[in-house]
Structures are given as C-alpha cells and as structure tokens.
Image 1: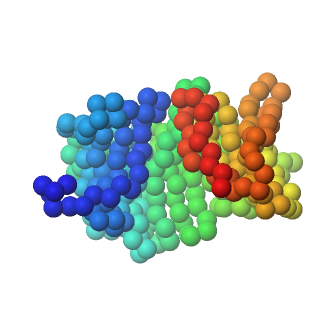
Image 2: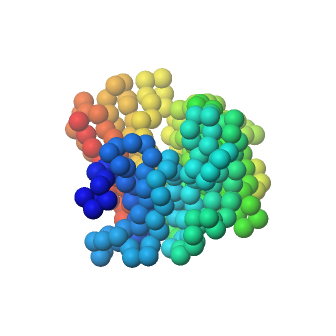
Length: 279
C-alpha cells in the first residue's frame, strides 16, 4: 500500500467454510514473520468494510463462525513464549475491539513453540474448533474447544489432526499409538470419530494406511467426501484416494505417471476436486 508506506507480502489466508467467500488474509510488511490480518470478500473482490482487522503480530487465526474468530497473538506482556510464539488464544466477535476479546485457552510461557487455533469442517456439515499446543519442537497437545472450555484430546505427543471426512477425524502420527488391542504404527494415517472426541471418552482409532518398510507418508488432504494420501513408495511418488463406507474405508490409487514426486497442493470440502502436483 503506497498510501501506508508499506510493501505488503502475501502470507496466506484462512477462508470460512463452506462458502469460502470471506477470508482472513495474512499480510506481511516486507516479508517479516509478523503479519496484519484483514478480512477480504472474494466475491466482491475487496476488503470488507468494517470487517476483521488485527494489527501486526506473530499470530494464528481460525474461524469459529461468520462473526467470531479465534486468534493467538501477542496480547501484551506475558503472552509470548521464550521462542517468540503466542500461547494465549482468544475469541474475537465481529465489531468488537481487540481489547474486548475473550480468552479461551492459555498454554505456558515455558512451551518451546506456542498455541494456535484451527477449525475442521467437512462436506457432511460437521464442524469443530481445536487448539494445537506445541509443548516442544517435537511433541504437542490437542484440545477441543467447547462451551464449557478447552478439553484435552487423548492423542500421543507426536500425533497431529490433519483433517476430517464425514465425521471421521484424520490423525497422522510419528510414534506408535496403542489403544486397547489396536496399534497405530509410527508413520501411519488413522481416523477417530468426531463424536468420540466430543463425548470425551476413550478414542477408538482405525488405521487407514500403514506404510511398509519401503514406504512413507508425505502428505494428506481432504475433500468433500474423500481422503487423499500422498506417499513415497520405494522412492516413487504415489497418491491414494480413500472413501468411507458402511463396510469401512476403500482405497483407489490415483492414476499418475511413474517416477514422479507427488504433493497435494489444495483441496476443498465443497467438492471432490483436488490439486495434486507431480514433478
């Protein structure tokens, strides 16, 4: 913006599902890590007048609904870790001053990384908001945001939530995860139901894909009703499409040329189309 004397650099955007019309755009002054958040209307092609605007900070955001966003940022003294990441998450309502935002989660200043909100939704209308808390550079905790407060999800320290399809929450893990008689091996992709998470009881994971000695998972993506997993198979890129059904998950290989590197560039819950890049 010449008027503001800034050279804005695009740092990504978080769009509100399922319409994907309103987006919180991350703008960096010259490419620095701190960003300014501004609400943009993709259909109108302009910033929303009177919309969400959050001043420059290292920050992470997620839509709770059309009129509420969750934000972790520098809220003032004592809200950043020693590594320089925010660990306090607050809810901000449309039209509300940033000083009036309400705290919904607090990590700890001793955390090596920080805390960030994220929201999952799928093509079946399921929706839930979570907190990712990076306690170390290698381990994390996950919390479900509820009207009664944030509740810990019983996942291993080296597991992460990676999406949701038809009420099945996708989990990737880099350590063995044993629940009862079920073992999810390190490097696998598994699912647990959103209902089990919301009920607060024990989770019952289902293994969707477990790599063999020559395979590794390189990425996952979710569409309206499918899960896409990109893998390296004997150093060759592959992509598998998984679909939930009454008798469990079915798998179909994505037809790509051989000897390529495969990555998932973008997906949307509005359709079963995905952008998959092969090199």
